[in-house]
Image (cartoon, rainbow, N blue to C red):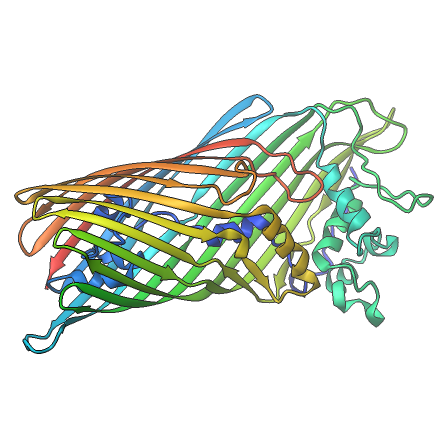
Length: 519
């Protein structure tokens, strides 16, 4: 048994390069529907309704609709099941999580002066878990044509400004040199077009014998034997959250026009562990070829962001209301930490198997960067049937193509071009209804969200149905909601070289319980 054990260094290295993909930008640009149970039961159609703690996350003018001070807290249980189809092989996996979904309060200050047309001021604060990242996806199948060897070959052949990575870099067994002197940190400014992340992928592939070097063509061919029928497994486990804390102020004019604003603080904490396995039974050669391999990646992204919102609600009549709200771009400052390992087995005709363990035990800590996610405009209308109930419709527009990584230098320029070319403007329709029978409220809703991708398949359209009920005890109210959503996707296991992926159908079931108290 032959092992390559790189134990020269352990700990942290700092890199100026980045490893982001378009899918990373989408993760923070999209929000799941969260909030109070009443809000979720009506599929979030509250832009012209107001009067709910989560309504201010859609239209900040909604807090001025409150008649009394109110505080509330919401707990949710989320179950997500992912059905995978990879070249005809069906697998499924599911994840269940229980979270604090929402907590907030609104305080109303009324002006009883009959000569003052500005009747009230409302001040509030609301916390929401806008995206629960707890999830697991397992895909298994036999790929008839493509291998992960193309992933490592792509980095080795084209990462140096479109040219091959210098052989002395990826063939250097001194891991301290290879991992610490990448990108702009090369001695004497060598190889300015080569990023640290790209060089590391090429380095792993070379040391794991997945790619070789042809000095005649100055290229790196794959050492995975041709012939197809590569058995592959891809496991992805994620955890964490994206949350928003909104500080709200709103007012009303003659109880006909409601105006409001939010200042939002965003916090994100995301962990992704992935493991890719591949083997094959293709004919052996006189030189080493790969029989099987396992490639592991552990990514941790954390940071915070800022955004603001402006909104208005108008009572056209006592029953009919219109709403308009704008949410700005969100500016995130993010940090990435990445560790990788690779384990391979090679065979030759008439020889023994060789084993290569490439586990540098190095944590790459990248410099902070800025992600600007797109703003959103929401148009709303609602009809209120006195004290009997209401019907509400919201339509929101968001241009995902405006997502940007900054600074827009050579490290992000290509990625921002990919975002602009791949992503598009998507609309979101939310419809909700409520019917009251004395203290009991019955609710239902529907939500549709278009694909953020131009091809409509990388992440498909979303369809969601919801329902719930509530009971008002006077100063206390209890609300319960159930929501179901389904969405299909086909994202490549890797963004470069080897881009095959499974067809995933995700089904999410959520039950939320809210306790509300009037103060």
